[in-house]
Amino acid sequence: MDRELNNVYGKYPNFLDASPLIIWHDSNQDDYSNVFLHLVLEGKVGSVRAWGGFAMDDFDLPHETGSAKPMAMGFSAGFEYHVMDGEGIGDARFDRRDYTLKEDTFKVENGLNIGAEWYYLSPLMYNRNEKFNGAGKFTIPFQFVSLVGEGYVYDRDAYYLGFKYGPDSCLFRLYGEYTDAPYEASLSLEYLTRGQYGIESKYGDRSAIDSHMDNLLALAGEKTSVLILDAALGYYLQESFKVNGGLQWQQDITHNKSAYKLTLGVSVNPLDVDWKNLF
Image (cartoon, rainbow, N blue to C red):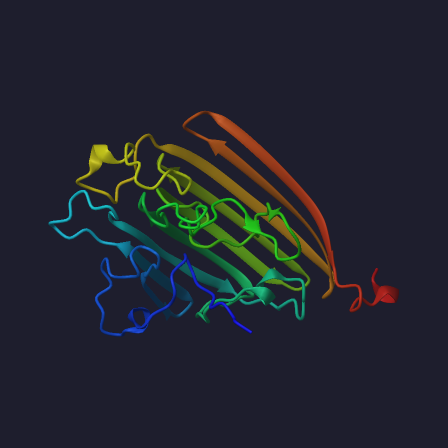
């Protein structure tokens, strides 16, 4: 029986994709593959942890002004201070951290941590030509496809491919995190600035960025600034029974608009709960 070889973007894999010696510049399967340069550094001195990251999709050489694939880069940096230790919650199987795939770091998960972060994404980061039903867009800015059925998950804990606010954005964030059984709490204050060229903008339509072609890393067009406050509190009656609440406030400073969101919830793993001694 004939079997069709699976392919991506209508192209079949070849040895070019596996070559360790190739210079990845306009040679990756004629726009159908994509290669990122990604560098992350982390260090810790005493109770202070610091980190930084750099990602590059494309880089314009001096002779490439007006390139079809202009410069696209992302930057991040942050530090965190571990104020005091705390007791972990235990085997909270519904905790999202139990299902998050990530690299090990020097972060102390429990106790009280305070920190600051900075992110900067250039306008053309994550953007690609819309080929094969728009598959060239490889980040999802506001939602994530549910793995438990069709549809989308609109949730502050939804996971993203890439930076969750998408390209053409700059974010400063102050935060605090506290975990000491049976309590957990978090507080986050973000100042977000976005340009007008987002992931949903048509790739190649550079009307928003032509005004500063000499600096493709600058935010494009008119800027929008937003202040975002997030607060959450959780209480574990048992390791497998949690009640929680949250409050989010957003203030669009540029257009003088605000929005609020209040959440209340219960997370239960019914097979592990000791119902007789719950209260």
